[in-house]
Figure 1 (cartoon, helix red, strand yellow):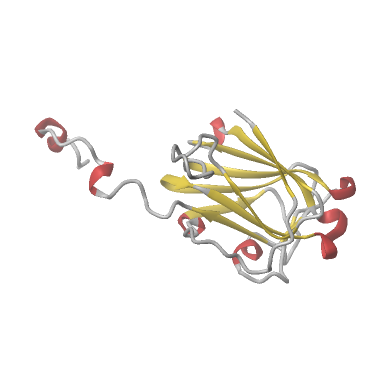
Figure 2 (cartoon, rainbow, N blue to C red):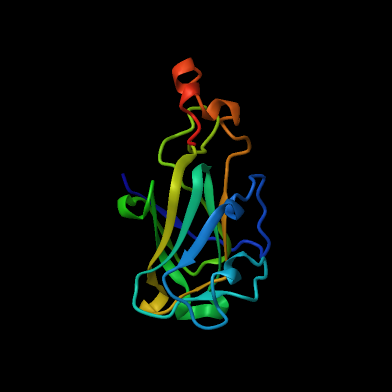
Length: 191
């Protein structure tokens, strides 16, 4: 299911969120980059550096987690005033268990974005009547696709990207292995 969200924000240069950044648990890769403007610029926390793509659209950032991780929100730092036609206007969010089965789960449209743009990744409501928040999405692979830029620009500039998890993990280490039978315990280690 693909949901479309339109965002127009003029947020600050520093990310303000009460959710933890879980991006450090992932291996990051990009579709292309210009020399000196690589994937590390997305994570350095400096609004003056940016990842710049180099090649045909669509451009994408792929995050691969070692284990299934709950992703609550994504935050993207953009600056239309400086980047003009390099500024993304349409993002597609894909998720899956591997690169071979990614499915589009969300489409985000923006007009002249400035600052940190945050949006929920999940597609189902949390269930709490007082909350407008969505349930976290459990993924092994998350991909942010830049589908279009302002004025149909070719390359793109993204100044920051944060992957935010829920306030509390919905499971503990002990509950990750629900099999406690003797037969399972006998074969749980490979020799």
